[in-house]
Image 1 (cartoon, rainbow, N blue to C red):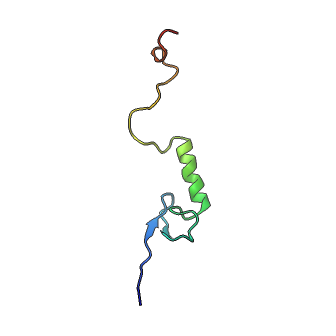
Image 2: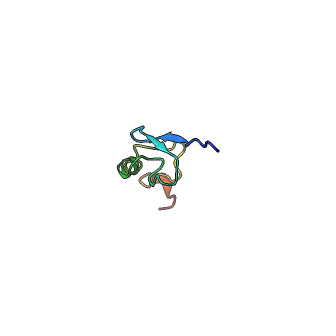
Image 3: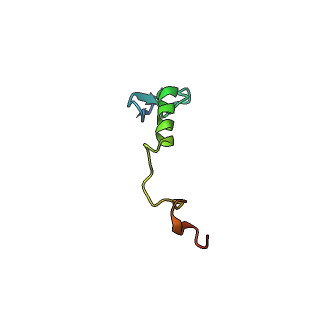
Length: 67
């Protein structure tokens, strides 16, 4: 008999344990609610990936020389 343990991760939003199995439709989130909260945080830039901006600020006068 094989004993296979299920990997469990913490929901990034509420920290509730989530089994890493195909039946968990919202993994790594515990629910659609937590998934949407996280998406909203990215949309409002509450979450950011550190680094240099890829695009200059268009309001910067030097961004488009010759204009």
